Length: 297
Image (cartoon, rainbow, N blue to C red; front, side, top):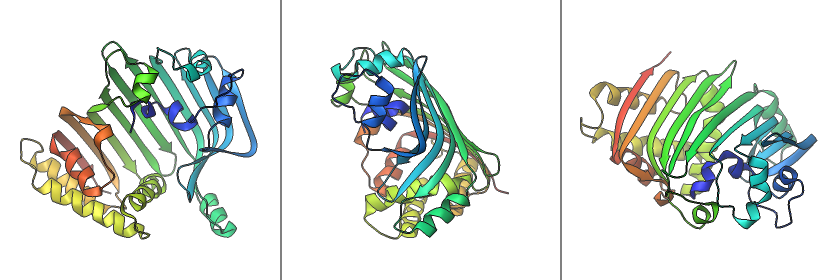
């Protein structure tokens, strides 16, 4: 995983068009295979940003996410997009994004199943921001929050170290990103099942090659539980270990309030992580100071 993928607007809108960008937002969106058009699809430019209305983001061959409106803003973002093909030296020092009216959308060859799965959901909203200090190589992902009035909410914050004074070309050609701190909070009333499980099941299916998502979830739960059991008290206290084991036991239906705080003594190199579920669980827990609380309903 390359560090520039951490920037939400680059995640959603790559790859880039080779043509000169006279309308940067439209060129970038239309050059992406990940974003599909729906009825009423439109792209517009904002002050230091872009907006997309009525789109479909494909996160796999058989699943996607429809959304009503997405906005992305950043430090002189439109000028940055105009120069993206020439690999500009400066990376935006800040950015904000929001996506409204998100629904999980299966892309199956069954119109009935697709329709029912879409209609039975309550739309979700997501927002977040980042701050980047290029001289220090410090990237702060600030409170990415997903909310649903009926299903609860989740938030994620993270801190990364990147190479100092990096530019777009250096990062795109293989720069490294180290995770130093991660904070996750969940108030689950169905949100986890509606948002996290489809993406997690798809990821585990690609990683393990199994067509049975339950098998992948069970394997991930068992691997994480095994790795957690052998962690010393210096990494996780007894109450946190008990809470995290209970949370894992409740997957894929965790209930109530869950908080997880990971502080890495040595930055976890994101680009070095493979797709193997055992490796992911062991590597993520190996050098982290872990604090957990979980109050099930």
